[in-house]
Image (cartoon, rainbow, N blue to C red; front, side, top):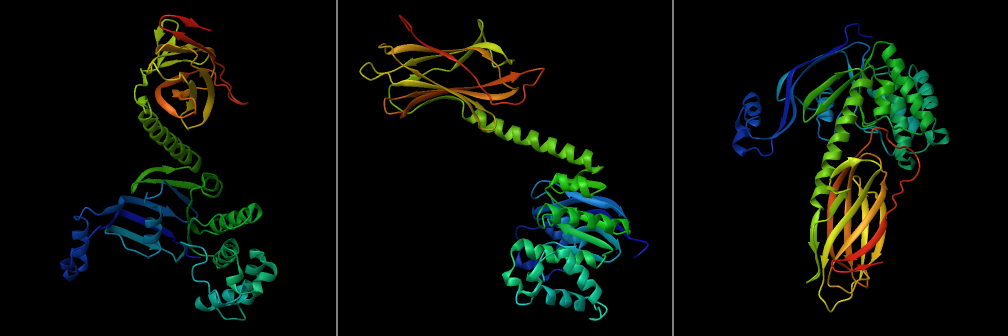
Length: 401
């Protein structure tokens, strides 16, 4: 084992140009790289500077397109940085896709021997490693069957068993942790830990925060090619998940708001803005448990059937919390719908209240929807959400039961 294992990146930048003029092919490589950076290309990594030392197990996390795989590809020598410097002390073994390089026409055992030969190992001396790989892969009789008969998971198990047995100095794994059932995954995790105990450097890209926390002693969070956070896995993964949650909530909220307001699908059927009242006040934000009433002014052509109204409460993630139907029994062409919730007891968050006016066949005529926010000091947990409402129909001139 190399006693000076280390990875150093200094101001590394990687740009994938969207389009390169044919004239650029005549330029030298240095000039080409400089030109690429000025072509408004896709920036995969931006000014990345860091050092990774012997014995570190580094997890790399981030959304798709954050630059994780690009970083591993540069460390593996698959691609070069557009600018900056990468210095690696130690031999790199990269598993960017488990199973790549295995021969489909050969058996599992033959693939193991072939891998040893490509590494320059003597066949007889390789026997001990072959036995260990076969035992670790747990493929049973399939070890002597062609790889074309293997499932994707079986190929991944064999590939992981092969690369982990060679005791790599610097091991790079991209999305290769789900290599079997829970028992095999646990064994793979222990093998990675053992490699690092021997002094290896291991870099792992994964969307599994649980795997990162279990396997790594350091975590890098990348976003849009930039290093957002570098530190203990528990701290970094928590910050990342919180960021993802907030971003998802913002996306949901944007979509939520786009579904508010009044929509009319049938001529002459009009609804005004849905009003949310607590006591005598119109409110959009209130504590859980508040007594609320929803009101909406509606108009229809005098010669049409009233139909019915459907009041829905929909959570930010799209879950339907409640649905109440209210027949429009009034003969009046202009009337007010009122729905009362004596105890609006829901968990804190954003909800969409939707009043849909349906015809006799259930086809929507018009809709009015608004957004509310529920707050709470003590968050209710467990059970199924239940929201009970009391519906009454009011004419503007006469009350109907």
